[in-house]
Length: 312
Image: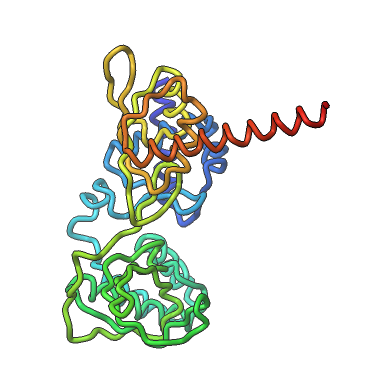
C-alpha cells in the first residue's frame, strides 16, 4: 500500500513537470485516484517544498520549488541567459527537429509561454528581458505604445514594474501618472524602455492576492472564526489547500484565521453553517453578516406578506 502511494506521488511529480497543462479531472484520471486523494498528494508536494501553481483550472509545478533549486545548482540558467537562448532559437534553422523541442522546454521551464506568433514572441521575449532587468534594479520603465482595449487608447506609460505574473504574460506595475497599481499585458507593449530613474513609490506597490475562495484583490481582510466539528470537516474537504491553518482550540473546536479579499466567499461558508461557527472578527465581516441576515429577514417578511395577501 505504501509503495502504491509513493508510486502515485512520483507519477504526479512527473505529470506536473511535463510541457502539458492538467486539470484536477485529468490528474485524477491519470493516477486513478479520487479528487480528495489528489488534493492530499498536492498538499504533500507543498509540504515537501514544491511550488504548486494553479492557473485557472490547470496545475503545474513552479520552477522556484526548493527541490528544483537544489537540483539545478551550478547548471541552471539565469533569467537573462534563458531569454537570450530563447531568442537565439528563434533565429535557428526551423528544419532542425531539436529547435522546437528546445523551445518547448524553455517555454515550460522558464515560463515563456507568451504566444505562438514568432514575431510577437521575439518582441515579447525582448520586453520580458527588459522588465526583468527593471525589476531587478528597481528602475522606472516606459511602456511604449501600450494598447489598452479598456480605454481604447495607444499611449506610453511610465511605470515601476515589480512582479511578472501568469507565466510572464502579465506584469504588475505602479503607474506613476495615475498613482495606481495596475496589471499590464506584455503582448500589448510595442517596446519597453528602461528610464534613468529609480523607483520612488515602492511603499505603494501592491501585489494581487488570491484567497482560498478564489477572490482576488489588493486589500486583505483578516477573518477569525471558531469552527465546530462539522464546519471544520467541511472546510478541510472543500479547501484542503488551507487545512494546515486550522489550529485546535478549547471545547473540541478549531480556530481559523485567514486573509480574504472579499467577504462573499467566507460569508457563504459561515451563513451556511451559522449554528456551528462563532465569528470573532473582523468587525467589518460581522457587520457584513448582520446586513445579510437583516436583508434576508426583510425579504422573507415581504414574501410572507405577499403569500398572505394572495390567500385572502
